[in-house]
Image (cartoon, rainbow, N blue to C red; front, side, top):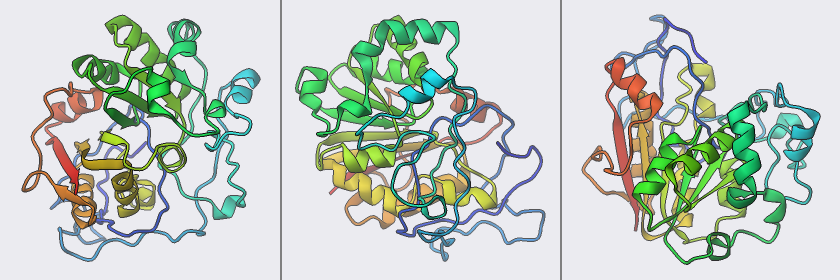
Amino acid sequence: MQGSTRTVNEGIDVSDAGDEGAGISRPAGPRVDSSPSDVSSGGSRPDASPLGSPPAASPPLGSPPLGSPAVEGSSVEDRAADTPTGSRITPIGAPTDGNPLHFRRVVSFHPRGGRLNDVQRRAWDAHADRWYLDPAQLIDGFDPVATFARDAPLVVEVGSGMGESTAAMAAARPEINLLAIEVYKPGVAQTFHHLARIGATNVRVLRGDAVDVLTELIPAGSLTELWLFFPDPWPKTRHLKRRLVTRAFTELVATRLRPGGTLRMATDWAPYAEQMLAVGTSTAALRNEHSGWAPRPSFRPKTRFERRGIAADRKIYDLAFVKR
């Protein structure tokens, strides 16, 4: 995902260009440690922009994005299943937004291989009928009460990854209905395995781009919380445009939160933490619940990426923004 020795120039993007997509848990690999004061690129670029300095520009809509690779390693059957007919959600790896490839929104994830291992295949076969939300069946929108068969506070987790933390948080918060959004099919299946193992039944998993899901399916003012824990930091300068957290994203989230609802974010990447703080603070409909960084939520277990960051002596940054 990134080089093992370089640091990178980081800017804080508080632009409102809607050119970001939803992320999934970042792949394993070496991480580059950095701090807000030490993020130059080979000494040829200035240090990271401090809070209050001019933000880095986001690419305008219509600028040439990176390519849109097909899902590698997936079978014909899997690829067909990943392209729902009549869905309001863009199929993963097969954009159908009507725009040419050079005029598509830049997304914050790369579709990866779709093959399931034996554990994931068994979990999918055993639990998908109950816990998986097929975008093809949500043409008329998403009805939380009908989906969960109960009326309870609705929480969305963006980028649930392999689902171990998702299952633990759902078990710790049995009073909520948790909708997990993930683009990686093996991650969805692995989430089913963890849900079954821990006995959590208050979760549904939808495979799709979170920006599409929030825009097209989630009713305005319906969310009690939205969780974005350890999204891909996209640390290289040329990849900054792929970061999910821009003002366009926080403004979209604000429309979906009910008054008093909370956007919770966490990262171990200091420059991205500054960006999250800056764009959240600049979103008029949100207020920071704390004077700066938030305490760690008691219900959130340490994720694999968090443990890796701690092992590398990186600070963990939590944020909580409340809908006014």
